[in-house]
Image (cartoon, rainbow, N blue to C red; front, side, top):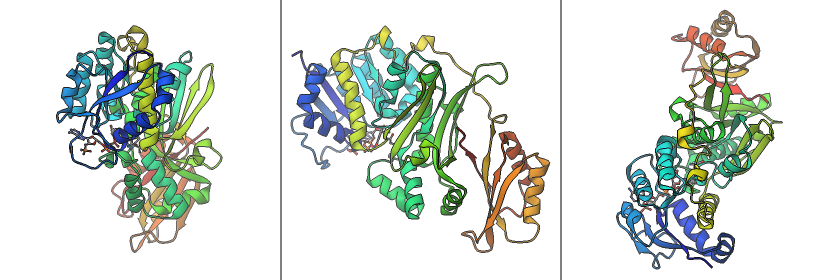
Length: 439
Ligand code: NAP
Ligand code: HSE
C-alpha cells in the first residue's frame, strides 16, 4: 500500500470531532477505498483542555493552527474552524502556499474568498475541496462538478439550510415556538456559531453562491443574492399556509435570465410557500434537497442530511479520499469545475419582472376601512387578489392578521402596492411577503 495521506485538522468542534470519529471508526474501509491510510498528524483548536469525548493523545497539538501549514509531516490541511476571514483564511492561504491540499467545510470563507483560493490552488497544483460546505452530507458539489459536468444548468433551487428547515418543519409539526426549536437545533450541532447566519438566510446564500459558480460557470457573486430569513415567520403564518395547502420552507433559487437580452444570473434565498404536492414540501428536519435542471440530464434531485457531525464529516472525508487517490487538482482539477480564469462574471438579474403568486401577511389595526385601504392599494398597483382572509386576533392586543394570496403577476406589482401602503397608520408592522413556489 502507498504511503499514508498525513493530515492536520484545525477545529475540533461538531464537525472536527466528527471527522476524527469517522476516520478512526472506518479506518480500514477508507484505506481500502483510498488505496492508502489517512493518518491524522496534528490537531488544533482554541482550548487544549476541553473534553471533546475523543482521545487526542496520539496527535500533535498546535496552539497556533496557522503553523500547521508549514509542518513537514502534513500533506493536506483540513480547516473546520469557520469564519469568512481571520485564522481560517490565514490557514487556508498558508496551506496552499506550502503546497498542501486544503479541505474545508467553511461556506462563508468559500463564498467570500473561494475564487482567490481556487486560483492559488490551481497555480500550486494542489487540491481545494469543499464538499462539506454545501448541503452537509449530500455529494451535490461532486454531482454538479462531475456527474452533471456535460450539462448546461438552467435552474438550480432547493433547501440549503438544515437549521431553518428543522425550525420550520418542527414548528409545523409540533406548534412549538421559534426560540425553543432554534435552541434544539443548536444543541444538535446544526446551527452556525452565530445562528443569525442561519435564520437570516446568510448561510443558505453562501451555499447558493457557491453552487451557482459551479452550476453556471460564473464568478461567485454572494453580494447579489437577494436574501431574507425566517425570523419574522409566525406560528400563525405556518397555520395559515397549511390551511391554504402549503408548507413554508427557506428556499434558495438561482437561474439564468436573459429577459433584457443580456445573460444575467438571478439568485435569491427567501422563505417560500411550497405546495403540499411539491417534492420539497416533504423535506423535513435538518434535511437538505437540491434540484438542478440540466439541458440533457433533465431534473436531478439531491437529498439527504444537510447538517450535523456525521453527515458533514462524511463529506469532509470523501474529499480526503479523493486526495489520497491522487485527485490533487492542477489544470484538470479546477475546484469550481472551470478554471478561475475561464469563469464569467454574470451581471445580477433584477426580480421585478418575475411572474409569480405571493402570500402577503399584514398585521393591521382592527377597525373599519382597513381592508378597503389594502385592497385599494392592490387595485392601484394592478395586483389581482386570489384570496383574502382576516382571521382571529394577532399576537398583539387589538391588532389582527390579514392574509392575502395574489394571482400570478409581476413581483414589481406587489412591491408597488406595499409602497403605496408604506407609512399607513393602519399597518402595525411591515407586511411579510413570501412567494409561492411554482413547478
Ligand atoms: P464549532 O462546533 O463551533 O467548532 C469550531 C471549532 O473551531 C472549535 O473546535 C473551536 O475551538 C475552533 N476555533 C474557533 N475559533 C478558533 C480560533 N480563533 N483559533 C483556533 N480554533 C478556533 O463549529 P462546527 O459546527 O464544527 O463548524 C465548523 C465549520 O464547518 C464551519 O465553517 C461551519 O460553517 C462548517 N459546517 C458546519 C456544519 C454543521 O452541521 N455544524 C455543517 C457543514 C459545515 P474550541 O473547541 O476550543 O472552542
Ligand atoms: N448551519 C448549517 C445549516 C450547517 O444549518 O445548514 C450546515 O451547513
